[in-house]
Image 1: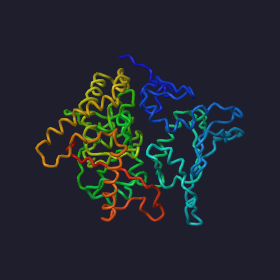
Image 2: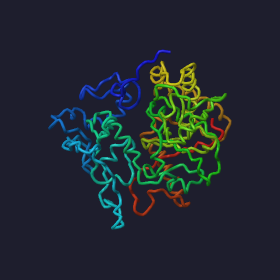
Image 3: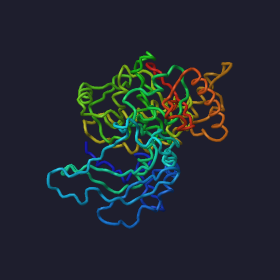
Length: 442
């Protein structure tokens, strides 16, 4: 089958992998696939629109993103390339960038007294970030020169600004690669957590949910001995289906019934460090390997934009993916060899829209109401809000309910990273969690 070249990133929407046909009339650089995506990016875009094309001081300067600190708005700054005057006398002449967060001799953290960078937190989708986003921050676009091996820097553009905003949301590099305090104290049925203050918020997101304007974090918890409910989790696998990759691989197969399973070659590649484990690692239509195991167990899910996530929202979203999206995805992969490009990928992405999902939501909601018609206190009623109605009085009502639950959880002994003495009060916002139980799925 003939292959088509992949779409350059600078031709895609800044908010999603769809083709960006609409160009901002102000800066002439930011591209969007729809008014919905443009609206989601407006809060951040308006800060930089039309301000990138200032005169470059010299050919050795590159454009970086600077957060001065406090509530001062971010801005573009021209930075002199640190390698511009280094002669190549002894091979590698790159400047080595290292991070220091702890003064070993003085036995204390560096910058712990710096005020929180409020503008940096406001820059994220949910208006929150980790406790360690303090003081000034400089963000630049680094690329690796495969021939020379030197550090190389290029100008930050509007795509990079959006990426920076989303990455800031998940900055938690001071935490160990293991469970956070939330995980340690999690006892079912936990429903609420402080947003941005636990390792949960540093995990992978759902690409399909993002296309629908409902950014979410998804965390598998099969390693948790306290829950003892390990098993296959089809909801987690559905949410983490990769729709960004443009080709297929042989790392993940689907058994009869649509169950994703790692192949022997896929397991070997991951164990040998040859393959990363996130969306996009295993090709179009497949979830990360960590969601293909029989030991996934419960999966924690929350919205990255700090909106409450109700049980019905996840149930409807997973049903939408299972009934509408997954059949298209699997059909697109049929009879393709490893490495071949998905020919109708753009068609599939274009069909994953808010309007399309809302139509499915209304039918799903109608069926649920009918199924619970005889119950004395049905969960589903005509007033059950959609995921897009988490605003105004609906949001106020849900938030009051959320605060009540959170208070009871804290009284019961639950602790998050934000409840530690040196990190308290970093955010007053809460995120409502949904725990998708394994192994039964939908």
